[in-house]
Length: 449
Image (cartoon, rainbow, N blue to C red; front, side):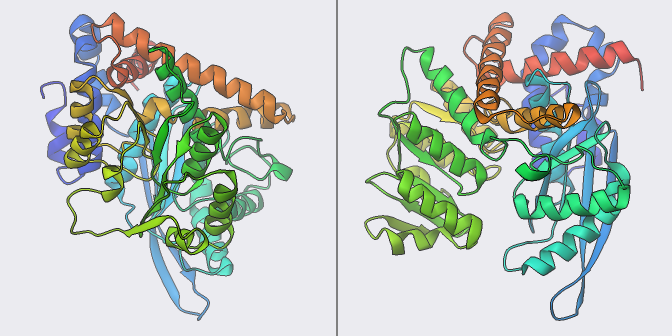
């Protein structure tokens, strides 16, 4: 497309995830660029797709057998026009520069939608915490932070958890940052409640996703009560999404991890969800263990040879992909359409391929992109920063109420932006346009830097 700088593809032809994210946004904002040529004249597009800074470093660490291992660490600082860089740290073997650039690029617009002054960034490593002892994870996190601490700060770059980085990893990372910097600062969010964390933070992305879905259904005079739902993933986002759906009267039928998925026709209730939390958060087990506890459920193993994910073949009314990028492809989208799905609300970042998005929009489904629907996580991260700054802790009810207000604001902002540019009820275009306008105007105000 003409509005994607040619050198973006030429420089990074193999960064497929990043180029996919850029194409999605630039396709959406073409009407804005046509209406306001000033953005093109000042090179906003060329600047907004190029990271302000990428830091790459080695992370040597010693395993429990005394063997020295080496992983690669990254931090992509994408855009700070409206605030300090904000985005997750991902510990997973699949991590590479393309994935982190895509995540950082997504965060630029997601964070702009939250109404909070936050820029966009992302980071991580190809280290896999699965199967590692606590001591190995601690040593790795300490060595990772020994380099990263030079580049982050409460007013510069504020990381948070992502895939593979939970409360354990955040604790080890923060402890090393505090030692090296000799200060106690809100430089990492997702901290423990006893040392600067915020209530609702672990659940925020999932809760916010469900609140957004409820707002979408309300535009059609409908609600989540009684709806059957498929949820993918089984980490923090999926667990919180499941919990809030149960609280709002919906019936959750599935959860998954990289090994496969479970389908429970009777529904995953609060008791079953507590088992999943113990399984994944404490025992660090696999979702397949669910059927050992609840044998009426069915487990289906994942297979790299399958073109479509069998999870999305099950019938349900609402879909919440909360696992990872591109987990719903074209074939999956047609399965969902044929099963009369009413709503797709993304809990993960870019879990639907471009083809899947186009199918959902063409069929007039309620479809919410992750940059809008899962912005609750970064929103409450911002609220955690505020609490750290004023040295106060808000009650969970206050944080939850602020989250609801923010998610409603994001929902309404997306609808209004889409309608203003002739794409009524298109949340994807609305989210991209609203986020782009806020960041682009800030860049114009601050000059060519």
